[in-house]
Amino acid sequence: MRQTSSREVYANPWMTVREDGVVRADGSEGIYGVVDKPDYALVIPLDGDRLHLVEQFRYPLDTRRWEFPQGTAPDRADVGATELAARELREETGLRAANLVEIGVLDVAAGMSSQRGRVFLATGLTQGEHDREPEEQDMRAAWFSRTEFEKMICASEITDAQSIAAYALLLLHERRNSA
Image 1 (cartoon, rainbow, N blue to C red):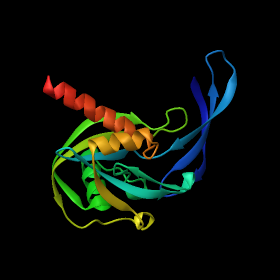
Image 2 (image 1 turned 120 degrees about the horizontal axis):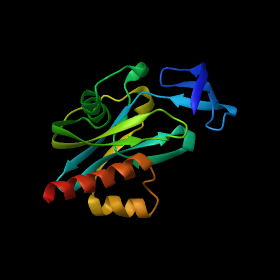
Image 3 (image 1 turned 135 degrees about the vertical axis):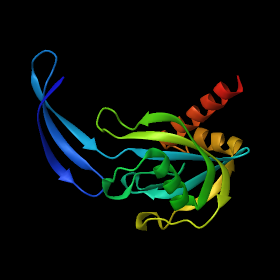
Image 4 (image 1 turned 90 degrees about the horizontal axis):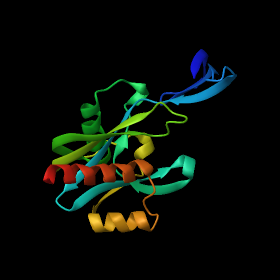
């Protein structure tokens, strides 16, 4: 597929939407809509057997849900992945990590969005004050054992695809490092 044109159809401080003219492999023409969002960081705060999650209202789904701390820099700013991970962890939970290790990359919705996420494992945690954005004021944070976390996934209490995929990356990371 080859891009022949592009126009921005919408923009706000968090994303842009563009419509690209394309020529497909068979020569036919079409359009492709793309949501451009900056890359995000997702952080798995781990203390022994415990995982730290945040719960917040997700407007598009009209529901609250538990997930790992994650987000992008304000105003679509370009921030280094490790710096962004430390910022999101502190902002949403108040936690500071002595160690932040990148363990993988996730594509959010590759059929419609350019956004990618970097997954970090945070250990050596100390508690401080959170610094949440206005949209996050109703956020809650709590520790869960791995067993509780897995039960919540099975019961559809955790449905965030990025959090579930990040947990799989954590398991693979641990398996790789124990061999």
